[in-house]
Image 1 (cartoon, rainbow, N blue to C red):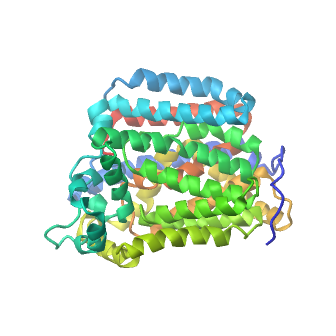
Image 2: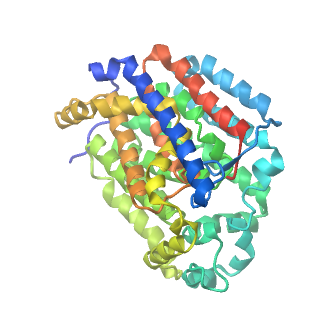
Amino acid sequence: MTAPAPLAEKSTEPVSPARRGRRPDVIAAIAGALLVAVAAVVGTVIQNADGTLHVAWPPLLADWLPHVGPGTPAALAVAAGVIVHGPVLAARLSWRTLTLVAYGTSLAWIWSLALVDGWQRGVANRLVNRNEYLSVIDRFAHIGPTLRTFNQHILIGHPHNWPAHVAGHPPGATLTFVWLDRIGLGGGGWAGVWCITVGASAAVAVLVALRALASERTARRAAPFLVLAPAAVWIGTSADGYFAAVAAWAVALLALAATRTVRAPALVALAAGLLFGWTLYISYGLTLFAVPAVVVLLLARNARPLAPALAGVALVALAFTLAGFNWWEAYGLLVQRYYQGVGGDRPQSYWVWGNLACTVVITGLASVAGLRRAGASLPGAVRRWRGGRDGAADRLGMLALAVLLALLFADLSGMSKAETERIWIPFALWMLPAAALLPAADRRRWLTLQALLALLVNHLLLTTW
């Protein structure tokens, strides 16, 4: 592949009946809703019978607790504002202003949903329980020796084994909060602020990538759906929102380098590689972002960023390896640890499809309908890509489906049984833009469904994360 000029703006979309029909959109959305309902009913039966699901309100790790809180009025106001004004503002604002407004609105949406549960329960106490990263800050007083012996504490049989989330992630995840503590931003409150502040930027990263790979018009259409993400319920309450932003910016920088829409594409590709490398050391599961990364290069028809990006990944891996942490050994031990805990008890026969119900909850019915359109158009999109005639909608659909494919790999691995409403946030954010494929006349209706889903979940359930 040779380096192309920046991808041209395409104002038209494929016009196949599969893309135009509204009835299939509604059917897809109903199917998604039914999947969640069936997962809830079947999961409740299984949980009440033998308790093997280890979730109180299947398929989500949550408790039934209808409530309102200080964030309720703000959440309603943000939702109404995006539904009424979001599509128009996304189309009319200058690009720079749009990215700033998108970030600010995403922040407001995440914060308001988190504060429905109040400051302590919704933000400050989320990351301080015994399974979370903050519980081991004092054990990282000497980072070097801790990294060298990190793998010795992964298995449950060790007398000083790591808590579940620390053992379940490479040490980069915990080191983030160690470093925050060392600069005076210790405790659950600052940890929550960090995750929300960084996590909200993921929406901007996806917009940047869409503008580079597809078109600015496509990115603008996707903006309201990215801002009003149902996944915001969990972005504001777990470190996975932070992980999602790192992965999102890695993909965005790679897209900018591949489409040569920046002055120094090699340096941007190196930066993308550094972020991809960091994702490997904050979450084992984010290695699957290699799938959308490859698709980015294929859509841009440019392999030149691959070398500097791999160099960036190698630099991060080298740093951790020289510090004494063995990634491959740690992952092998994690697989054993996973089956030592509730992961070994949870039935894959339920979670292999129950996880997909969780995905519907965090991406919303609009994304389900949009992915239906992307899937229906995939054969034609591939033909057009091979002929060099692919349009913006084709590229958006193929990118969203590539992330869905990575998510399915995670699902079939058996290492993602339950809690995927937070674990799969990094993947969910890239499926949200599929809603931009829906007819413009229907977008406010779909945005309303997205907002209602998030508001109902946050006000009827008390989520653990």
